[in-house]
Image 1 (cartoon, rainbow, N blue to C red):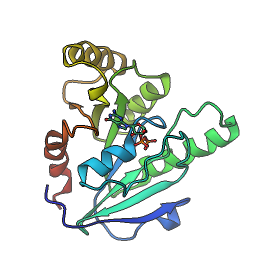
Image 2 (image 1 turned 45 degrees about the vertical axis):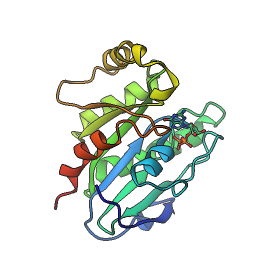
Image 3 (image 1 turned 60 degrees about the vertical axis):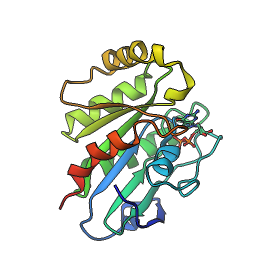
Length: 195
Ligand code: GDP
């Protein structure tokens, strides 16, 4: 993918703020701090367009990034931030679910999990939920640079089994640090971007 332009559009707090038009959207789901912003930045060759933050749970909005004036990345609010009260968590969940289940422009969801750790219950729940709604999924196991190459298959297997990833759902080993997996991920995304 050749990136000609990338632009932050809006941190939406409600559907009225979503961009108009029919351009395809690729959403990113995963726990806070898993590396969603870093993955966007790496895919589009920008150091800091999507704001990465060491502080988990900051992103409580849907952040839209317009790429090549042709499609959007949508960074979903990170789930699994323990210090947030349940009422607020429920509110987020509703907000995310509404977007995921109702948005026609949404073509595929990239679900990120940390390659180092077994998926959380929230990861498992989200993955199942997306499948239930028939939303195309790509699993990205990220932060691969943080463990040795020899350990990768073992960790991938643990994640594949815990999430019960079906054979037709791709899993991509990724590192925002080294750029590993970038071309493979783009080649999986491109079919969804053809109008
Ligand atoms: P988000 O909350 O999901 O958007 O996560 P961020 O993209 O802000 O990343 C959280 C932290 O993990 C930051 O300190 C990143 O630098 C770090 N990080 C993200 N991806 C990677 C990766 O692939 N490798 C390494 N080593 N660090 C990463």
